[in-house]
Image (cartoon, rainbow, N blue to C red; front, side, top):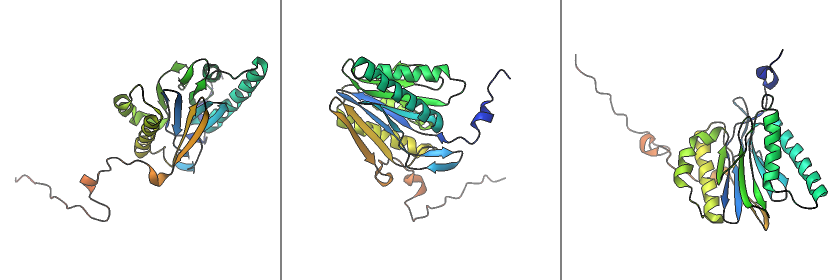
Length: 238
């Protein structure tokens, strides 16, 4: 057999049907993700931490196969530790992103992994790199990924502004992920965020009952506990 049977290899895998994003701001980056992990239509874990520590001031957001992305992150984490020991300094975000991209592209027929790498380093400051399914390396001011991302590209395009500070960026990430989680059945749970700057990493948590809410169709469906009035359908006489 010359080709890999992906259906045979991936049957029953634990999948990070997910919403992940990273946004650069003046002085740092904000990474964020929902917390739902699915196995088909079954929610295997509703409080997953999809923000993975890679090195000091470098994190990655994982989407795709949970097993694949965890293994890739572990390999990159080990390689960056060796890099730091050999070179006597911290690796850059670009070095970390290049390692992720190399593994994903070299094994694109065997891995299901979409990864966002973000962080801060002395060479480039804050930076965000997107590594889509199958490999590729793209530096962007903001990046989104996972199944929920398709619902919020328009919102991000219309809302993002250059020159934001920390608070505006945190609110943007929170709003975007809440919108994605509301529409995408494979995303949900809570929001976990990390603010990465020269000073270190600050972790933030938004529980499910405190997520920002937007239009929920109450004008059409009526308020909870009340049945909306039924308007009879007009029938054209014969």
